[in-house]
Amino acid sequence: MRILATNDDGILADGLWELVRELKNTAEVVVVAPDREQSATGTAVTLRQPLRVQKVIPRLPGIETYSVEGTPADSVILALSKIIKPKVDLVISGINPGPNLGDDVLISGTVGAALQGYLRGLPALAVSVDVGTSRSLSAAARLAALLAQKIETNILPANIFLNVNLPDLPTTEIKGISFTRLASKSHINTVEEGHDGRREYYWLVRQKINDKIADRKTDIWAIENGNISITALYTDLSNRPALPLSDGFCSDLLRQLQSC
Ligand code: MN
Image 1 (tube, rainbow, N blue to C red):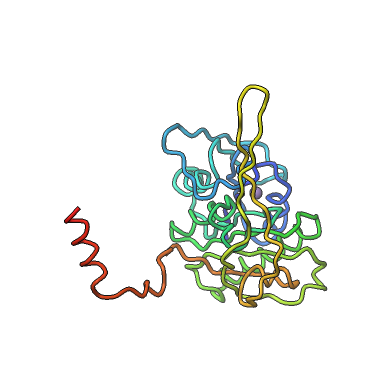
Image 2 (tube, rainbow, N blue to C red; image 1 turned 135 degrees about the vertical axis):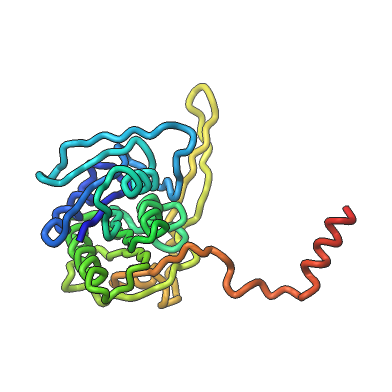
């Protein structure tokens, strides 16, 4: 099996290389990742400037490694369409030292990178740990390798996009593995104001919500209660089921628009 390993923390990040260290035991791994920290860049792609790629010396010998002067999504798009030949069978993004849960997946560069693999018809995993300890990173790497094996042997379907998060516990104390759905909210977004001596500035702040989540089917509940959370993600963001609106809503709306 050939695997593209990438991340949003940059080509030198420990989490990425812990992942590679584990995967290379059972697979052929190619690394293509941003040249610097790109956390919280979500699904961003670079369309208005050229992208430079450099073949670099890997942190582990024998691993073909490229750094990209772009976003995590850029890295995967370039990897799959230009850099890597022959083609890979799986994309794994991570391991992110910090959770990507609930609505966080919408800004996560870790998830944004994996998404580009999924959009190109490959199975894709985004892997994060609650706390980036070496214990958590190595457990997450082992889990990623096991999931890769299950994809290779068709135990998991090939058209799959999984968001995986691990709690900060020794593996023997992990309570279970839950297939979850995303919790609706993980953070409160606020804006702080300051003054740098010359000008005012604003600083976007994301604070973790401390209220306990009650819904046991969600990813945040799973992590907070000592479980590994695996959420199957889909690219269809449509509201399901559709809004409960009357039959006449659209025709009324159009009539109002036309009479404006
Ligand atoms: Mn990150």
